[in-house]
Amino acid sequence: MKPFDIAQIDEMIHARMRLGIMAYLADTEIADFNALRTMLQATQGNLSVHLRKLEAAGYIAIDKGFSGRKPLTRVRMTPAGRKAFAAYIEALVKLIA
Image 1 (tube, rainbow, N blue to C red):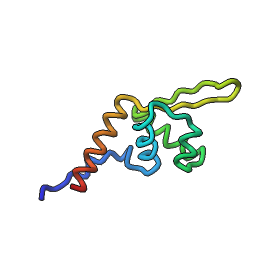
Image 2 (tube, rainbow, N blue to C red):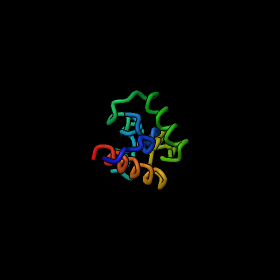
Image 3 (cartoon, rainbow, N blue to C red):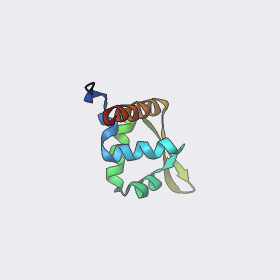
Image 4 (spheres, rainbow, N blue to C red):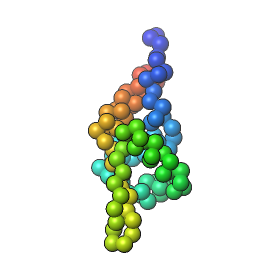
């Protein structure tokens, strides 16, 4: 059996919360902050920290605006994020195959 290079696993994505964010965004074009928070059962602060890390890596873009008078934060995966997520899934497949 060929040895697996564990360095192929992207640590930016591999954290549980960030993996949940990326998996959710892979299926949707855009998600609002509250929907992500509810789906991931995350606190506002915890989700914010992980979103900032993914944004700094270039994997997601965060758009802030308003819906009426209420702040609205929307998150979408960037092309670089889609590429990184696909590579992450491929690395996992190699690991378990």
